[in-house]
Image 1 (cartoon, helix red, strand yellow):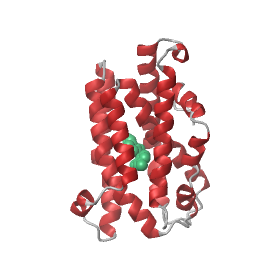
Image 2: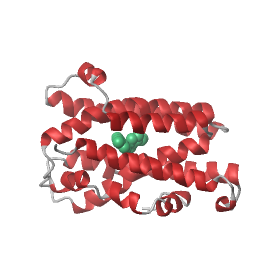
Image 3: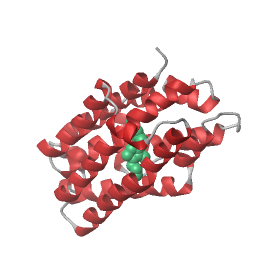
Image 4: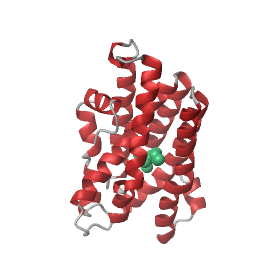
Length: 224
Ligand SMILES: Cc1ncc(C[n+]2csc(CCO)c2C)c(N)n1
């Protein structure tokens, strides 16, 4: 999956961390169905809280945007997170007897705090590009994971619905749109040869840090 021109450059610069994230043991357990249910639910409760803060980060991107197109794209993501993606978590948890108010008041794991606050700080301390570099691994990594697991899925895994959410055409379109948003935002601010910009290495570092925080987030969910 390329999702535009800048994402593959950032992904290559992240080196092994990218594979550690997208081929994590947690991900393989979702794909082959061996992930214990309690590990999945532990992840899902934390992920609900994660999405609350990610909605805040995309809302921050609205305020850091320089064009109406950027504002529209980021506002649409806030809406998609609050109204679509979080509903999947609420639905699965409700079926397991966990209410939305329990989800909202759950205690955040340190790995969750580290990741979400890192992304918010990237946006507060930096500009729109810093924020996009920190947000990209989450959106586009799940796109890659969904595509790979969706192709391999035998139907035997109880996590087929989760996989389908990210393998789905709708989500894949979102990934292409976010890839295009990043390409246009980088071209606008850094010009046609962004690798020559003094900012390039810092953007790559932000992407890699967020990728490593995704690895730790999966690790938080694994059986102890
Ligand atoms: C730890 C973690 N990382 C990534 C995602 C996926 N995700 C987060 S924000 C977003 C954009 C939605 O349009 C998507 C797909 C997740 N749920 N949890």
